[in-house]
Length: 67
Image (tube, rainbow, N blue to C red; front, side, top):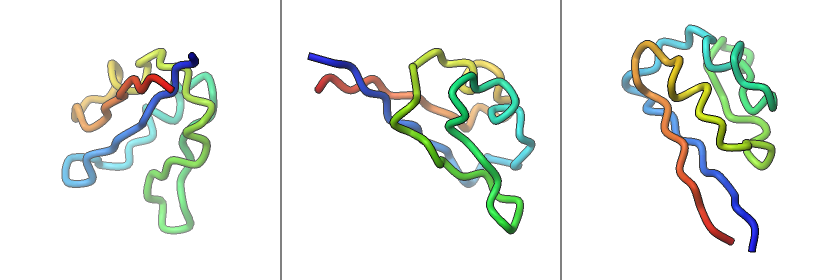
């Protein structure tokens, strides 16, 4: 059994500051052409919670899923 993580962004609260992108060791996030935060590599999420803990707007949530 392996562990996967689901990454959720509350779009109503996210200001696209990029802090989560800067602290993510697995490059899960990126900006699109409109400078909006997007999840590009969710499968690489290790569940370290760096994005969730560093987000000043508390809009990130990492959910552990058992496979």
